[in-house]
Image (cartoon, rainbow, N blue to C red; front, side):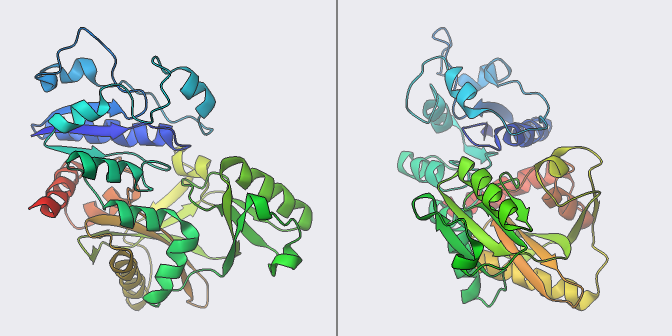
Length: 350
């Protein structure tokens, strides 16, 4: 097959997306496919390149990537470095090249990757892609809306309120919020802009940080507990994985700095607890319409109470990412998983 692996973009998770994309592209090449890895925002601008059989020049066209940095990327610098300086989100030749592919593997993370806008564009252009459709992606990406959808299936989530920049209120008491609490962007990812606030001073600073990234934020009750994740493939949950940060919580640095967290799969849980968490993950996928693959994150308190934090429509895809680790437990290695995600996504178009 001729496959485009789409990565990069204009998201705070830009570097993470490149890491996913490079690992997926390598696996698909090893599986015998012709693969081009594209930066959806930068595109490919070379007037001398013939796009007739663009996959014959796959290695030349594919973007080259480095390691994930310790800090989120400077998106203004990214914008300034684009050659054509167009105001179009899609870089030069991206849509043209994607239309020539048998399918696009969505390695995007964060805004305009998981919020459904790229998926909606591809639907209009007749481009096939992996993962959920535009509507399910949009619902899952909005944490406030997703929590409301969770409730329709009886899936518990932390109590919280949504807050917009124009209606900002710095006093948690007036919002009916008890401290400590968690403040986070409404549609962000990789825990960027997420803060645990213990005092009113920390609460105000947390609002400043969250509003730096987005105009809409979510404020939730703080749940102290163990952190878990559950992948779902075509409605069926994979084994539960536990994530135990060495220090702090599972923030951007702990997610992508080697040795910052201990991940255990299958998680050390009573069978009944693991099955309940898997059932909730399946219910989340069913409620939102994530009919190909997804991953839901949970917190578990000492008394056995569990809470779903969010659903990820395009989970990280490196061999050491959470979803691939879960798949490996059921006998599916990384290369097999990459091809499997393509096959189950193609069923949408049958």
